[in-house]
Image (cartoon, rainbow, N blue to C red; front, side, top):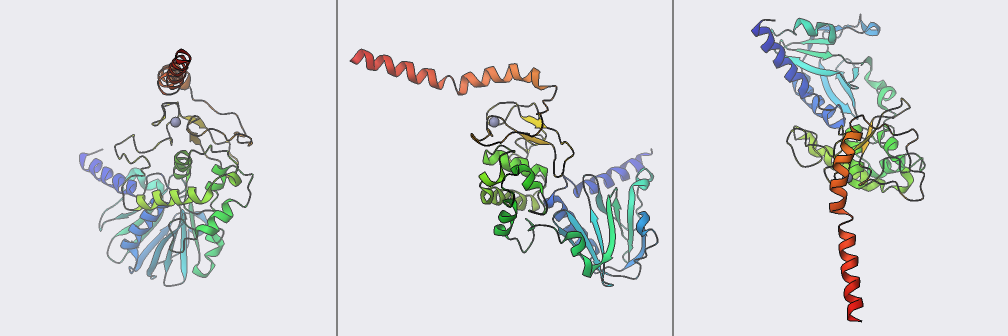
Length: 335
Ligand SMILES: [Zn+2]
């Protein structure tokens, strides 16, 4: 690859990554806002939809009137009463190419949508797993099932809490990830919220302070709208931004205990789940246990002997022996 092509490709990669981070409500909201700034009010002069269902659709001549997010879904609307519904899932992205700019050939196979605008720029959807065209009047068929949108203008905490608790026996981590209860939250915010609340992920939703959890998740996500990284620790340095997400086998930033991971099993709403067994112990008397065996990463056996003996004697046992033996002899001697 020539140096020029490499530079171009790097620039485009960077631009694509701007829509990313982990594709959760906040990063989707930011992507929609950025796309809205580029597209709204612009006429589409040519459209190319590379999805079998809509391969012959033609949006040319239509003007973009809105580009909004609903939870993790995105809706592009035109003045012809047409909505293009897209969803990143884990890998998709929206990007805008300046006039005369072309995608590197290597990315050509990833294009799902290309919309040429009347100012010469091109909006491109890459690797987008969901691309649908529908009448704007029918948007409820693709987003009507969603619960209150954590980042939406009509946020309704009481309704979100009601929906989250509607099946009180359900593990709280699954309830939080159910977009029918709460739209926009994803795995990162769910596991980080549970860590910060000290809640074991498989605690029944009915025994969790759902209002407190939802308020915390929303506060962190709102903060992320105006900051470049998805930070829950307050530390923006690379590799330090989260407490448990993606940190299997590494020491808890609070207590040193190795973070545990349970991999997704493929059931509805299940994702990989990380937690600290010390900071998030199961509640006594609840059936708060993972439904399937915990998958302990290969690195854990190596980490455990090193981390635990060092941390535990310092934090827990040292306190107890020092307090008890010292106090008791003094009392006995005085008597
Ligand atoms: Zn911990």
